[in-house]
Structure formats: structure tokens, C-alpha cells
Image (cartoon, rainbow, N blue to C red; front, side, top):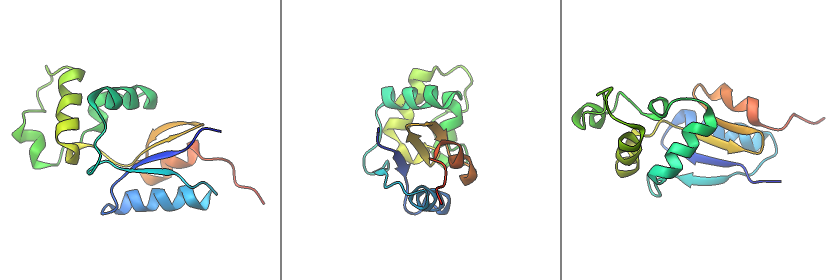
Length: 121
């Protein structure tokens, strides 16, 4: 079985809640602290594609860097956005979870339940 991965920020309460939900489901995920080890632009585009959502959905629009870098410009391509996110990982919305059952931006945290194994008992 493939590994479950969480792109995690330990300072974020939603990210911590999702990590706990994954562990409660009996899964020990591979944890990527994306602020320390940012995904590449290509990885970000692949993650967005796997979620089925546009790349813009992975951007934290309330970060000051969002406007400072002009990322609100609708003319920017996914390549440009992905490069900006990789270069400034604080802009990446979190947490992103990849499991054998799918990929989700787990915001709200309950969205992770769709891609966790069913509870046993």
C-alpha cells in the first residue's frame, strides 16, 4: 500500500487536527514540513491536479506576500503561480494530504475523512 503524506505546518491548528485524524485512522503518515522543505513548482501543479481543484485554491490569499507579489493578477499562469508558491512556501494553503484513496486540501479539516481508510472495530 502506498504511503499517506501530509504537507504539514506544525504551527497551524488545522494541520495539527488533520495529522491527528490521520493517526486516529491507524495511519502513520510521511510528514513534509513544507516551510522547511517546499515542494517544487512541478510538485505543486501535480498536487493541485490530484485534488481536482485549480492551483489558485492552494494559495493562502490572506498572507501579505500574496498581494506584495501581485499574485491576485488573474493573468498569471499556473507555472508562474507554482513558481511563486515554491519560492515563498508560506503562501501554500495547508494541509494537503495524499493517500492511496486520493488527494485533498484538508480545509476544513473534515475533508481528510474522504481519503482515510474506514474505521475498523
